[in-house]
Length: 202
Image (cartoon, rainbow, N blue to C red; front, side, top):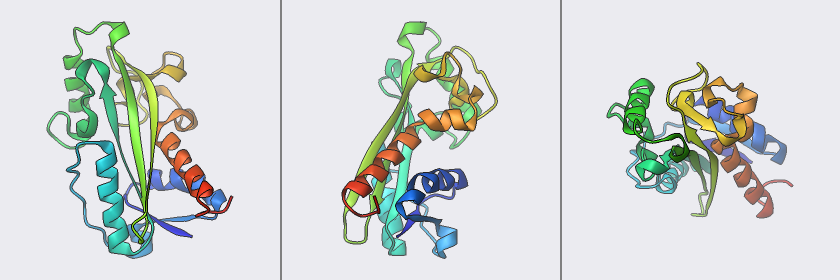
């Protein structure tokens, strides 16, 4: 079975391929499938809504089952912000440094025990017959007072996962990060649902 991945991110494709390959699923980017996808405007108010928008659009335009995800950071002391606006929190899409600066400033008076947060990912698989499968993965942790590490991207330098022994996400190896990542957890759940529904090989 061939699934389209609604992203240009090769790292996402590689991760999804590692999880779904044992199920007999081939994952293709739009370029590999020879289709041109519309750059979907993420107008949803939740990760779930944005994941559905992207997966449905990719499925409709390609005619293939399509997997998409939407993810971001939720900080409890900020009532869940930056949330779906994580990538453009400081007003400029994808400016990691400015996003981190704004986050640290917003939390400047918040003590250690109240800086809890989580990375969240919702994955959606949309099929040509209108069927949708949705899963969610989380990685819980807290926001540090300053940056640490040079790896990863986004908020990784200031996010300290509960399972990382006090290290920021940006100091973890790729394998360590993969093992606890919100995206990995959402995609593994999706793989299990595909198996349970008999869509993919068990």
